[in-house]
Image 1 (cartoon, helix red, strand yellow):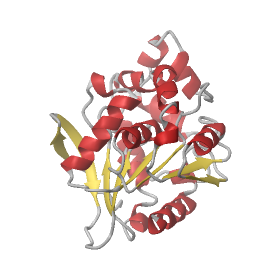
Image 2 (spheres, rainbow, N blue to C red):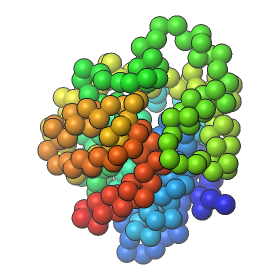
Image 3 (cartoon, one colour):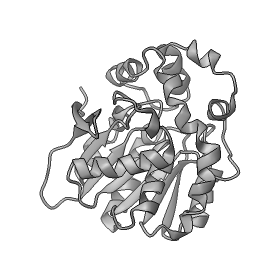
Amino acid sequence: MSDIKPRFRTIDGLSIRYAVSANTPGRPDALLLSPWPESLYAYDATWATLAEHANLTAVDLPGFGHSELREDLLSPQAMGEFVVRIADAFGLRKPHVVGPDIGTSAALFAAAKHPDRFRSTTIGSGGSSVPLNLGSPLHEWVHDEDLAPYRALGPKDVVNVAMDAITGYELPDEVRQDYLAAYQGQRFVEQMPYVRAYPAELPVLGGLLGDIRTPVQIIAGEHDPVVPLRNAEYLHERLPHSRLDVVRVGHFVWEEGAADYARLLTDWWAAN
């Protein structure tokens, strides 16, 4: 049975799903953002370890996981602003932010627009380089003109495409069922505008990277077929206060390389 116990609260008029760990005075706060197409249960393999080092608040970003969708938030810039609102709503004064996958661009926009709001940011496995350098199936999700095939997908199709890419990690049934439940109906197609905004918004983000003062850790899979390592290297070359940690796994570093991910993350928190 997972240590993650989700609940819901309203933030900016939206029903947002979240989970928290036990609060231990003196420990830093950490805000964990859900990757796509998963949910906050993506942290199931690392939760117990991370909770020994920080007071955790994990959220399904609006429109993802089991949180309510609002179309105007489905872009990295808009989501970055909402990340700040999430931190405000939970009273997280200066948390570490962990934003893998789609959280990469949102967390960086938030750090760029709100200097000193976060203690540090950990990102990776998210499209970020300009020109775009994306593998399959993310390249197709961003660029395909005809979305009809995606509208025909059922939740098992969406989740299985992602989960079949995970190697060396057996997804617990409770977690798999949560992912499946998050993709009923047209949910997947409704989320696609977020990554389809990359061609317009990643160049904007690229112009902001050099001015980000927040310390940034980039954790990337060496063999990521979805978001090639070049994306992480691109960020590391341009962010003035960054560290790049490469793990010898694929895209889902937080699950495929859970022990390394937790170690790298908690070491980073201790140093920042």
